[in-house]
Image (cartoon, rainbow, N blue to C red):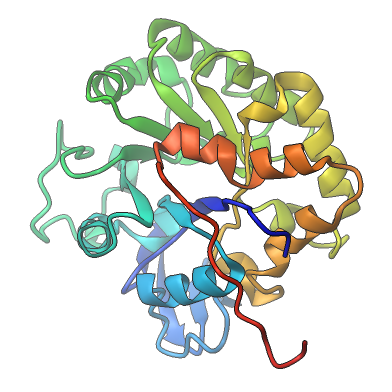
Length: 312
């Protein structure tokens, strides 16, 4: 790996126990990295996670080997609410993680979310104390009009925290999010999954990053271009197209760990960026970490030492 890089992963998931819900069906671990998802068995994480615990310690081991300085932990309904676990992670490893609380839409609240487990919500939907931001799975909301949630966005802005948001495909929600952005000019927003780049109209989500405090993170990029596989030339082309829309200074690398690690290594999720000749060294540094350091507020980071492996 090139020397002198600061690397920050803008999109990872963590849990001690997966207990989620999607389309009214529970999501739970079966062992050996497999989970029940929509009534079918899926390899949700690498098989060496045989107890289905996706812990901070396992991620840190991967981070150290891949020389990743820090991560931003996001959440998803399919994993279940991980608020309590993430608070414990941040207490234990404050310099390596930023964490989001999970906004729970009314139609998603369920026993699987374990709402009696000592969590205190604002308006029965979310909490902010102790968290760096709030995750909104906008693509799964029953009411897709985000302007109906203006009070939520305003409260996060007033608290000086950020929104991590996964949007519906294409431009279905871009107009309503634009209205939110214009009414919350000081709110930091990270749009996930690179605008669902393989779906029509993805550029409309990227265009929102023309606003001062809106960024795009690439969590799941290797998943979206999985059929093409390594070294993901079309993913590189998409990064360059997004650069031309909103500027390289608004784009952040993300891995979507651990789900994407079922077929690639954490190191290779970075290597295809490092090895491409289509991006300059400055662009790689911005994309892999410098932009995320600004957005998430990581300071005084230094490149991590390299650990040689048995193949070298």
